[in-house]
Amino acid sequence: MSKIMTSRFGEIEAAEESIIQFAAGIPAFEEEREFIIIPYEEGSPYVFMQSVKTPELAFLMTMPLVFFPDYEFTIDDDVEAELGLTSPEEVLIYTILTLSGKEIHDLTANLMAPIVINTTTRKAKQIVLERSAYTTKHRLFPEEKEGR
Image (cartoon, rainbow, N blue to C red; front, side, top):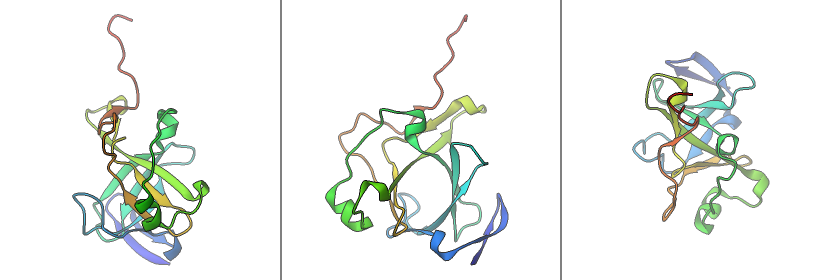
């Protein structure tokens, strides 16, 4: 077990086999290579991806199919090879969330750059979908219409 210091959760223990490895880090955080997934709360669709190295670095994420049932993309052969993916059952997909306002209904998902994790090898990569209709700011909750 590793002890990981976090600014949000205090000191937590994580089994070595629960650490997710990003060989090249993630865009804008290339030096951050190891993370753990921490559930927001039981039954919640949200998780935190907490840096093992940097206590104050944690990303709020969700599985995109919970909010976007039609979300789909193809994982390139080179990414499959890099992550050691051999079957669809090994693939775990998350999207990073951003709170662009003050309320939970202001959450947006970055569907253009999903996090792909091999659940067997714990290798991960954030991939940027080229020539995609997806953007970095898809609303999780539709805007409420005025006058209703």
